[in-house]
Amino acid sequence: MGKLDGKVTIITGGAQGMGAAHVRTFIEEGSKVVIADILEDKGKALAEELGEQAAFVKLDVTKADEWDNAIEKTESTFGPVDVLVNNAGIDIMKPFIEFTEDDLRKILDVNLISQFHGMQKVLPSMKKAGGGSIVNISSLEGLRGTAGNSIYNASKFGVTGLTKAVAQEYAEYDIRVNSVHPGAIQTPGIEADDIKDTVQNYVERIPMKRIGRAEEVSKLIVFLASEDSSYSTGAEFISDRGIMAT
Image (cartoon, rainbow, N blue to C red; front, side, top):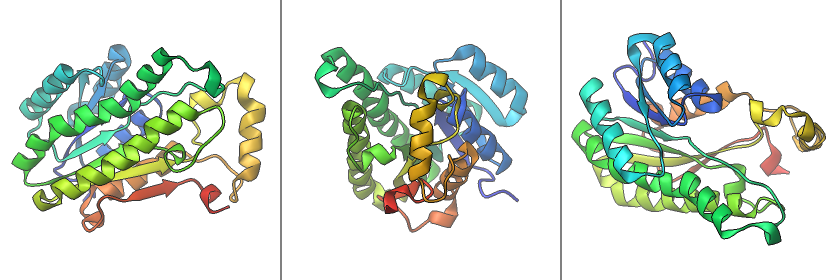
């Protein structure tokens, strides 16, 4: 018996990286999963590899009409949605004075507006299911400020606030909304040669002295998606091996 047996889940940005780790873990726990991503080839390949419990839907998370299509295809394939994991996100780092309005709009569209669309579009489906769990992936940067990361900070603080407000509004429908705040996680994005020194300096500040694994975040998300967290909503869940405690 898995923690998510019988659940229907949509995971955005699920074709690669942390999103793909979440997809695999959810399927291991018994959920049917729709991999929603703009990366069609990778998404289809992952769905084919994982078998009949997985399906792929091409989704540009910034476009409301594509969310309509994703929800419709999920319901026709597996049934009403029980869980939404808003995982898709991007970052651009540079000094604040160098950011352009285009940078601002691009980051906010992918990191915040997409989660707004996702929650709005999935709520009617979750009502049909009799309740549900929305897990919004924020970041440690949604809880603190970081030099060179100002617009990302703004987008992730927005996710944190939006999560709390929607959790208040939809608690009466047994729809829970929580945010997850990962620290540095081992993904291809932090393995590039040009940031090795930066990553190593960060590791030295982590009390447990290592980068996290994507699977560790996935298990936290499973907890929030499952009935194990049935009394948790509107809260921030940190996965950072102690750095926010310093």
